[in-house]
Length: 541
Image 1 (tube, rainbow, N blue to C red):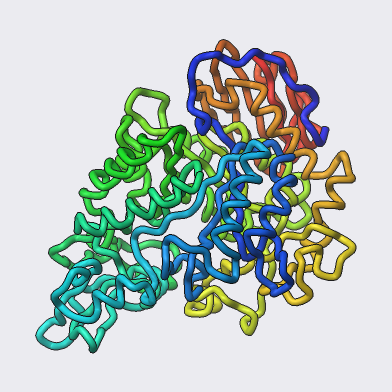
Image 2: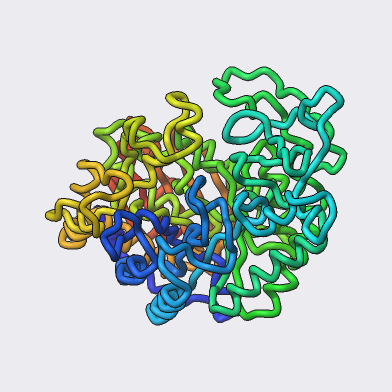
């Protein structure tokens, strides 16, 4: 069946549990969600106007990517004013109205925070670069040149080239782990920590329910500026100088967890606040555990286990879950198959002909994982990666590394709302990126009217997760990978649920006892004896 066959009526536990534990979170990329004023760029009033769609999915919260004042060289992740809304997105009053509408619909509101760097147009940086002495002089990472004039260390930036840029006004180099227009904040400085905590307090006082903290493991560097060692040989293509190093000194400093404790101390003075960190890199699992350990750090973290994976395999799923055992002191994970920085999963993980079936399997699997589930806008419609011509690219990383980096722009294209409209209902005849004809055909209004659509399937799967504590917040009692077959057992509040999934394009026969129990859901023609390609069952055992 396309939607779950039945919904169990198991009574949920009455034990206190924070709202975010087991939550489903819907990520909104503001530029591409809905344009309310016809300028080609999505905005906060546009988001507010489409929140009914999000609420109808059955999610618990929205996460809004940056909308702060910014020159937009990295599309909002280069912040020039942490406490205001960029005019292209609206006003603070528009933000307040959005929060009020979300809360009216029962949705929590999470927003991005970018503490590792600012824009070079931020007043803090202007003051810091003006002189080597003064109140802001050490708010960023400055260092003298080597005797030969070369940069202080061999560190490389994520977006290509050295992570150091010379500033003639100050006569020193400044550090930037991303674009040269994104200077690195010096979070070793307690005054800088105080300043960003004041930013967090500003938004908490406006009614937000939590934060997703961007690139948190880049927040602190080695003050000794030691060179990074070379990375060992690999058979993977290296498209950036950044890929040739082990990044052990420009990021991931051991003092980051102490700064996180200050964040947690602040958020604990408010009620029901959720914090989640984005953590990438070679040591992501270790750092995520440190960032979420116990009750004095962040509530959750997510890495890139699935976001950049070339294939979705049972082994990948089991390995990811194994990193987060259900034991005291270990944090709570969050999972995303797609986001604004990664190519659309359907374009990465399956052949074009298999996408309709794979999309149904994919959302069922995401909702069966222990942890929070993050859905990226359009994932519920089955949107795919749009091919963006070079002359229409905006993504600075894609432009710098063309054509070897798959553009992030292709996953940031406008949401299709109305299949009959020339702009797919986005609100502008000339959107900042093309919608893409294939995605226009997947518009929300078309799918809402089709009971067998992916959109309605997604609604059903989210309802299934909420109805069953084992799926929603239960422990993992077993995860078995056997070729393309995945068998995942979850247990919670007195019930046990099993997901049995075929992640491959062949047919998988099931043993006599594998699928015994009460059938809760089946997708893509699955039966208790045979799983066709990309088919799955959910069984109450």
